[in-house]
Length: 504
Ligand code: MLC
Ligand code: AMP
Image (tube, rainbow, N blue to C red; front, side, top):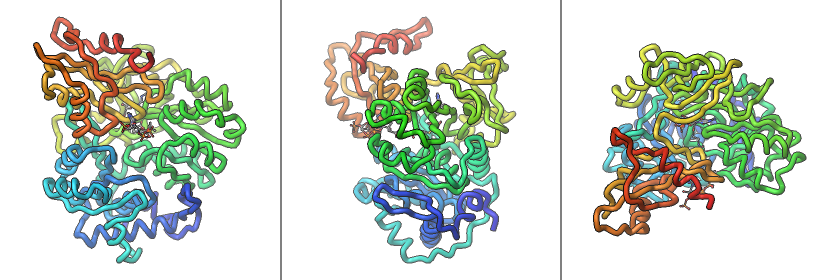
């Protein structure tokens, strides 16, 4: 039965004994073995009564089995909802309930907490640990790998990815088969990936970058990945001789540059280094070229759109720019007030239209209508400027957002929790420059009259309900928040005031 995404990414590799995943322990999983495993999971899902369109929330460590869950969801026509393992049970409960997920797969070590989450949100619970073991694998082991792929169209949903919001409430971005497939096809061609490529994969697989950009490209091209559990510069260096390409957030490149064994000789055979998800400093670009002779290719995308622009594969890769619109994708830089397209050289809000643009926010029609125009353009909230050659630079954000090591952190979500802490009158969370992560959150607090704030107790309280990466690395107390005539907190002044908080 036709299932465009499954057919393009998975079905055509089913009988191939070519390498797909090289693991750090020396094992290699072939394309064919991977597809067999995925089909067993597909049978396991079906045996649980899941049917096309059901949402499956997956909060597990990175492993080949975790990736096979994604393939299995596509094969059964389920909507894959991957979640950062750093999320706390409170956060996960929101996602699972909001999505109406029928199944939650979590790490067995957290099963007690997540049994409560599953019960509260009406989902069933299965487990998978970092090695792939757990009740899900046990269930799959009882099934064969013959599975009749569910029929899907390009407009059917393939994934639901939650992205935080400026109101503090996360939104589920609905991604169709077409969104994912069109982007994988465009990027594979633009970056010239073929079956001879081996991608060094150290990104998480619960976000667009590691899952849809990196993995979908390698599946479509038929190449292989050195599949590392996380970023570890020693491991990147150890496995680089086996690879042809690397994709990472800017922290990947700053950590490599900080490593003495990262040399021109080590990278001489590499075909491509790609960066995205956060701004790559022009200085990092320049240092990287000076050390290795390679110019990093920077591209720009987001959860709602996959990839929008890219520096050219052949041609000038310009430091500080995110390149040109990808084929088939339109980009406009617009006046934030009127929505009118601005001339080249003017700064405005970046808008995007193309087959990559998502279907809207899950069960949030008003939010969808306010960010997705009737003519199909999506208002990204990023501030950009286009030059005369068509290169886009991202120069800021119209949305109140911190990007730390490639993870998005919405200040509002943290401020709401800080404001609830004993003795806190009000708070503002800002991003301050951080050498390793690009930026990191700082909480600025104002105490109630006569209150003395216990900062350690506040940090502990936050850690109970917020993923660690969102917790402010620094809390400071001031007398009052700077405000403009309209009463709006002037975060730009706070950002200036605390610009050195992580460097001094
Ligand atoms: C980990 N920590 C972070 C963090 N990552 N804190 C802030 N920001 C981050 N990004 C915290 C942990 O909670 C922990 O805190 C401590 O740092 C050590 O954790 P770790 O796991 O050892 O961290 P590390 O390995 O150093 O991870 C850093 C990182 C990782 C940058 C390698 O975060 C990463 O892989 N980021 C990539 C994110 C990504 O894929 N983004 C793409 C989104 S898609 P404590 O308190 O417990 O010590 C997208 C679209 C697009 O944006 O365009 O691609
Ligand atoms: P996410 O919602 O996690 O997908 O993050 C998307 C956001 O990351 C975008 O809206 C941008 O603000 C930012 N982003 C992605 N790639 C780049 C880049 N190359 N340069 C600057 N910002 C980027």
